[in-house]
Length: 359
Image 1 (cartoon, rainbow, N blue to C red):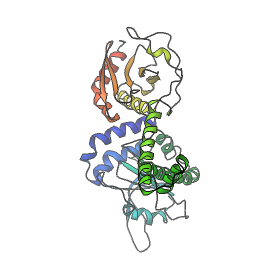
Image 2: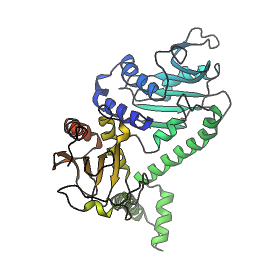
Image 3: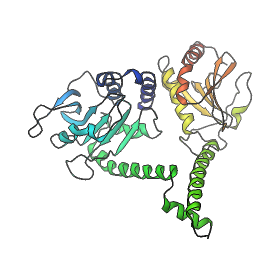
Image 4: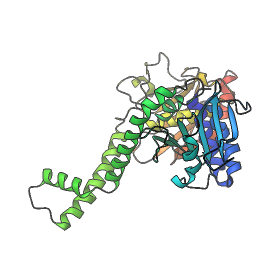
């Protein structure tokens, strides 16, 4: 199972259990240790995952950080954990700050099992930065997160490459944050810039307020339009027109490959279905095939073996289609995590298809 699929499994676990994981130990066991496993570390091998890692720090003797991730006898990553109910703050990283200068580790993680914040020393050698260079959340895994996290896996851990990338990632995250702020609440400088381009009239206080609201609304609409027009591509998927149509179905798939772009939400929905299927069949047998009408999830890349369809093209309503024989049932979904609720139907369909039936 690849890292992306493992992360989707963890995303599901997080959604199901986070409200029950009120203690630090519960978050460690249910969320953090499986994350280490997803990165390729053997959590039962004390030479790879050291719990309650101790190093003397100045006059503070015997202080502990929750975990040290190691390979080839070297400490790669220091990890400090908090309960999943806690919003992470820099004050929670005090032990990481102290340990950073006394170990060989150049990477530190502060986590509550849901949010993971990665720190390094991009600003001053051997002194941990006060801002993370990379963060991600199990509540909202981005398309690019698995690729970034691969760098921290045991098999690919290369500290020189990580440090070289850390500066860029940190700058990117800061730029992203500023853009998000501008999108949510445009600054006066930006309002003045746009207003000047739109109208030569002197900008009054009332006009500033009006332009600010219009800019925020226009950005939101622009993003929705681009998504709905399928102009944001998450993955280039080969979409050859099928040589045979699904028995009893329409020819919707015949337009595959004709300017079709697979969106972030379709990829995320596919990953969830693939993760559910992984318990029952080799996940490599579960593939995505997109078209202008819907996004099909197939077993063995066979259009007679449809596991599910993602009807995500409507600007107002999204559906996931499940199958019993040739009959499709459409289930409305608002949040992608609702796809997990369809596990019984998906598992039944996989059993049906794996047993030789098709639809």
